[in-house]
Length: 456
Image (cartoon, rainbow, N blue to C red; front, side):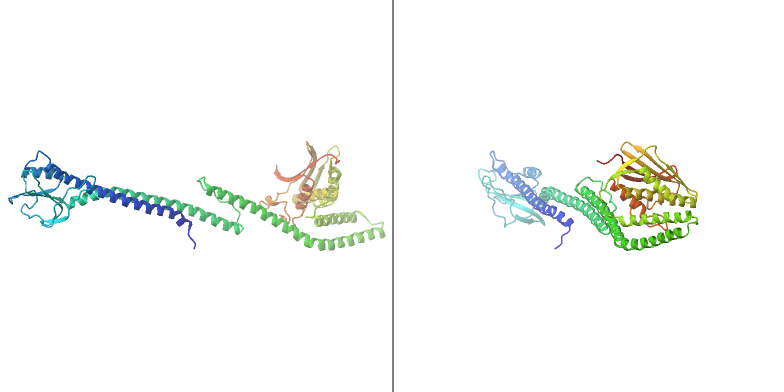
C-alpha cells in the first residue's frame, strides 16, 4: 500500500500527540483528585478543630465563622433537638441516609462524604458526631460542601494540564504538517524536474534558498542534467558521423569517377590541340584538384588518422591553398591577401590533414567575404609554435549556430553542407592544436594555434 511521505512524517507526531493526550489526561485526573483531597482535608480539619482541647460551644457565630473559612455550610443538631444552621434554609431537615463519618488513618485520604440534595441544592455531606468531653456532647454536626464549588475546584485544577497538553500537541502537529507540506512540495518539484529531464529538457532548475539535503539533491540533479546534455550532444555528433560514414563511400566513389573522367577529357583535349589557350583548362584542372581534395576530406571525416608526423612547412601549405583559390577570387572580385613570415614555419604533423585544414578555412573565408570582400591570411610565431589567422570581411556566422560552428552539418550557407569547418577542427585536434574564432574590428577571424619544432 502506498503511503505518502506527508503522512509518514505525520505518524510520529500523531503518536506523540496521543502520548501527550494520555499524559495530560493523567495529569488532569491527578490534579482533580488532589484538589478534591485538599477540600476533604480542609473539611476534616474542622472535625479536628471541633474536638481539639480546649473545646468550645458551637454557636451560630462560630459556625458562620467556620463557613467563611471553609466555604461549607453547617448544621448542628443538639441532643435536646435544638438546631443551629448556616444553610440557606435553616429549617431543612438533615439527610437521613448520610452515615457517620469516621476519621481516616494516618496516610489515608479523607472523603468528602456522599452526595446529597438539601432544599434543591447539591452538596457533599459529612456527618460528624460530637464526642465527650465536647460541650455539645450527644449532638451531631453536618458539614455540607457545595457540589458547585467542588466541581469548580476540580475543573480549575484539571484545566491547565489539559489546555497545555492539547495546545502543545496541536501546535506540534501543525508545525509538522507545515514542514511536511513544504518538504513534499520540494520533492514534487524534483519529481517534475526529473520528468522534464527524461523528456529531453536539460535546463537547470533553480536551487531552493534553504541550504539542506534537498538543496544538495537539486544540485546533483542539475549536474546530472548537464552531463546528460553533454552526452546527448556527443551522441548526436557520433550519429551524424556514423551517417556520414554510411553513405560517404558510395557518394565519393561516384564523384571521383566523374572528376577523373572530366580530368581525362581535358588532358586529351590539351594533347590534341597544342595551339589552344591552355589557361582556362588549367583553371578547370585546378578546380577538379580541389574537388578531389574535398572528396578525400569527406572520406576521411570521422576516421582515426595514422600517426605519421613529419616536419611540415606551414608557409608552403598555406601558399598552395592560396594558389588554388586565386582563380576563384579573381573571378568573383574577392581580394585575397597572404602575409607569409620571413622564415619557414615548421611544425610536426600530417601534411595532407594540415592542407585540408587551411584549404577549408580559406575556402570558407572566400565564400563568406563574397564579391568585393577581402580575405587576409597571416602566419606568426608564438612562444609555443605558430599561429595562423584567416580574417574575412563577411557578416560572420548567424547567432543561432555560432556556438556549434565546428559540428558536422552545421552551416549558415543555403547551399552548404557544413563539413568544411568540422574537418578543419578535426585536423587541428589531431595535431594537438586549437581552432577558435571571434569577431574582431568588423571581421570574422579564425585562428589556428599549432606547436612548432621538429619531431624526434
